[in-house]
Length: 197
Image (tube, rainbow, N blue to C red; front, side):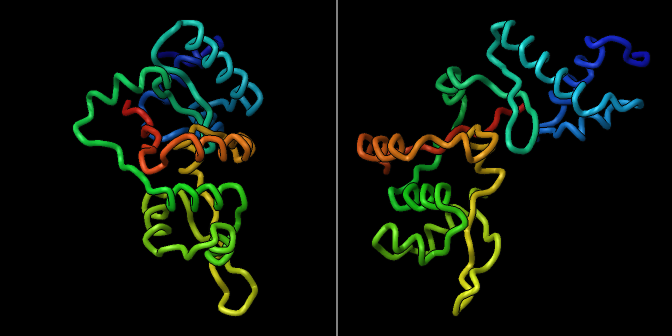
């Protein structure tokens, strides 16, 4: 292909790069595709146009912006069908794991002691190890108190796996409380992993 001339040329190159990468790509990474930098504003406009193109095409795939960048992913309404292709079952998490994750997500950064104060019970080390192994939480520092307990916060992977761009997109707390009351959280499955390209 010759040097891109039209917005459609640029969008085809961006589209190809996003399809070729399993991980989300940042605006800066996409700008690096071009010999002449189109600039951040132009790149964002092209990404918005490309997202609209895919939305208007009524396809099973969409262009989504996550906390880590832009990626193509399957639309949520098709996950039920895609799950039938998987041989393994998604891990299920206990109520303790889900409550701990919710506390960290909504109150971060928090210490293990903060979580125990809120939940009213001791936090098992295995609960925190489960969340760390999934890549959803990490220590982001230490509180300046005796023992210097670790401060825990959610990660970009948590946002990406939950389909969020930022923590401001978390559901309101009353909605979470209603869900916890209505659903037996021992049966909650993890959200689907991003689709394989």
